[in-house]
Length: 112
Length: 109
Image (cartoon, rainbow over all chains, first blue to last red; front, side, top):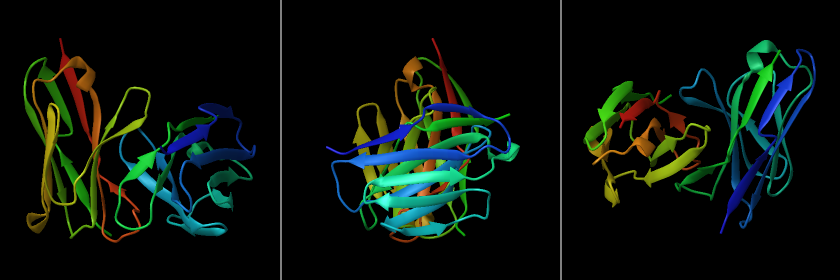
């Protein structure tokens, strides 16, 4: 069966520090991968998605970037965090086509 | 882009009660999913239902794609049903989901 892992689970970082959140998927190959952010405990917003190694599409302009160095690894990064980057970040995967998406347990980021 | 609206925004239920959550979307969709977000923030897949009706235990869902809405039914609610329920849709086949604002459900014992 397929599983998705995110770490860390919680993170407190000072303004201006770098960020690296990691997501890995097991049990499947060539998945579509996604980063979402949830602010204020309500709806999620898609930040990045990837259909293959090195292929990243950004959905919203922001202070963050994403990379996919391996087939089942997706990384969310920032060079200098802003207070507004605080939130709950979730990674997701799906197979190609109109199919079900599955989410990781999320990372709660607080920028202080 | 596509708009997704969920109603009601908040719902308080007595244990054992039934309820209906609604999701309206502004355009045709290839993908529609219902999720339950637990108190730890994890999104639990409930239904993948771009059209038709499905049932899983006390939960069921119906999507009427031609009229652009989906309903989630909770029967005989339990305290463990508390949390936020999200509807999410995708217009294309890339599974780039657009989420509604959620319905926050509190089931009281």
